[in-house]
Image (cartoon, rainbow, N blue to C red; front, top):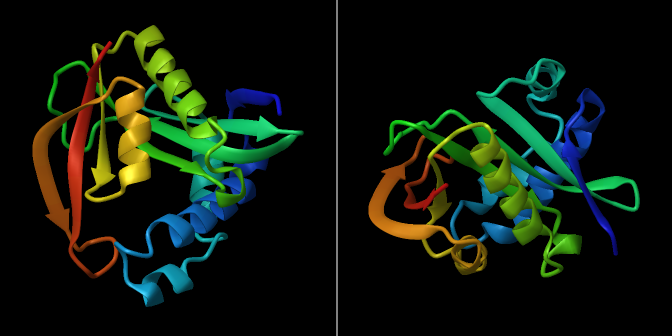
Length: 171
């Protein structure tokens, strides 16, 4: 199964929405309220995403992983929301459609995102992961990220407290 990594285009917006919702509903059952997950809409915010994809910048980059010509995963690299290092960037999101889990796509896309950040001149990449999301933690640790012991809890997204832990990687 050859994986092709590429920058996302405006035409990928709907696939990205579908991947996000499918991945969240499968991966976050133990972390987010069921009613929240069931109400996720893959078409929500697509106009805003299309606008950002039409004008990519170093402050917001989306890459996709294609298998047989279809997007099956995506990553978002953006300006850090809670910067811990002056020249850092943040892996905002990494979602793989559940039909393609455990095939190395998440790891491949993570390494590609790290290399993109390094090429752009960043010295550090960070990411926030849901506490207890062991498959994601294993992927990030396998890609050289280090758990730094910083946590945050917010209920802004789901209406329920969501604990996240910080990982960083020097570039």
